[in-house]
Length: 104
Image (cartoon, rainbow, N blue to C red; front, side, top):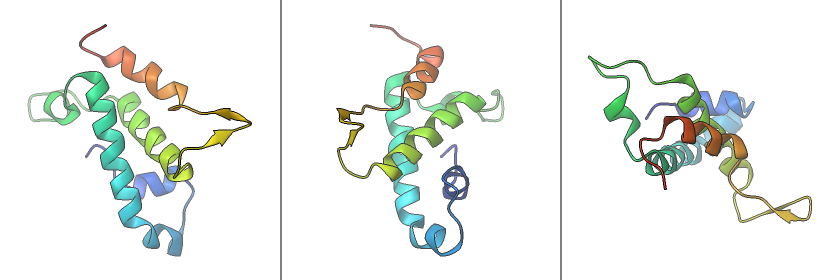
């Protein structure tokens, strides 16, 4: 994974007992968020970045995974925000589109 549960806890401003109690939830959200981002990219992030002969993982991709995982942590069920249905945070789609290898 390109982000850790500790980094996600920091993103969410979780501390102490909450971070420890929700560790597995944070880990699951990160795995799901990275898979989601990778499916939309059309490639696995760790196969493309961060290896011995590769550039580092672009910070925006890491941020997109953290942003999506944080969103899912705070919106654990299908939710309405301000009376309207809320989709994946807009910033995630913007970041993913910059790094995609294919278009529709």
